[in-house]
Length: 171
Ligand SMILES: [Zn+2]
Ligand SMILES: [Zn+2]
Image 1 (cartoon, rainbow, N blue to C red):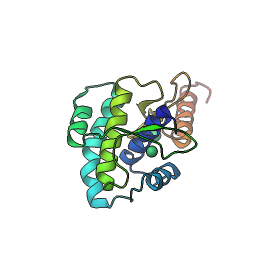
Image 2: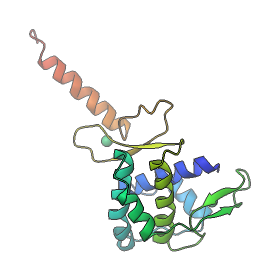
Image 3: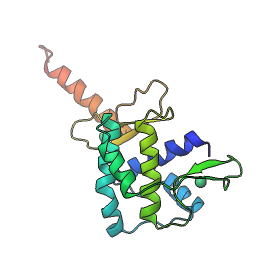
Image 4: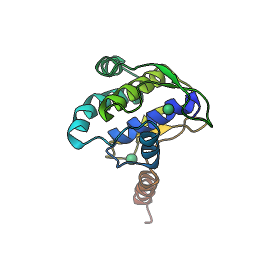
């Protein structure tokens, strides 16, 4: 995995966790590659509040404090790994085989810190659909992503269409 792709993918992992989604293919692959087990609900409950605040800070473009708090709680361990034979060397922010919460905390904290400082690979946004509290990772060319999913995008399109029809006099 390329360095930038690694940061982008760790950011996707952070957003997936905060959105409360079940393990994606990306998460499974990451855990296998880095010998990390799936965290149990109790330990995940400890990570999620500070992780949520950090993801929200990145999505809103600040304040920086929650990201620094996450870094302080889960200090990254920086080293270069070559376990990915096809992708070459990339930065790791935690040791392989660590406890899942420590590994996730360190890795996500480092990735979110890069993104809030303007790493060019991805940005994080909040879903613009009414009543949706989910975040999304935006890797589109012009950073135009607005919704967490196709469901939210089409729900919003339908609502806008209905609202327009209501205001048409001959309807
Ligand atoms: Zn790796
Ligand atoms: Zn949404």
